[in-house]
Length: 338
Image (cartoon, one colour):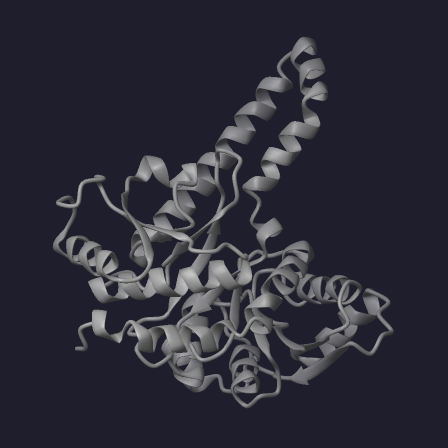
């Protein structure tokens, strides 16, 4: 397997990207191709004292920044690491593309350069969401690829998320829930009401509406919502969890008794913290495009890069894209074409 890695995308590129690639190479035998400015990448490889043959460099001399307009960047920065990497995936020079770069540019580039899967109206970003009750994590679709969604998009998200959870995570007949402001079928906007009917009529294991307070409880395996709602859920959860851990940390440092108690439960707290650490989960797959693409957090460190590579590999290995293609044909009867 050949993994294409965007060496210039993200806040910590290329240092942390290269370090993560080197760490991942220690655990796999697959080839890693880092795309970016050769001199900068070679410098980091030397810093890591890497002398193996698993990692190679594909030259790309432009960089798409977080401030760049996604559409303009894809059209005008053709020698950027992101565009070159996606073209390599499209042309069969690699089996998976991983990037911590501009999210909008990655979504737009994936759609334009790889193409949408037939029957998919809007590709989606699928993010891992922790179960705060201690169970297995869920998958949140869409996590921010499209701010607005139609009912048919919600069905697409449920279907693509189900395929990924089943084939990559190994969960049979995953439960699908629709984020809404009430559990009753009659609640919500006209879009969510229509989405409810379409999801109900499909072959998915649809459990109905899921209220915001139930999202963190692991009541379903695939959480379906529009990208605006999904992104707010993710950012709010991240902010709340960071605030809670800071409060706990400050409390445990408040006096000697608290410090002793903190020492006794340190391992438990560390394990709990890992449940909310995006670096543990790696990246989020872009679903609905004709190729395995993984989006990493913009501030990803080497640990996150390594996780994204290792955890993302089944996306390509299990032929998830091809399975989604077939599933989209099977559910065409439920989708009203525009």
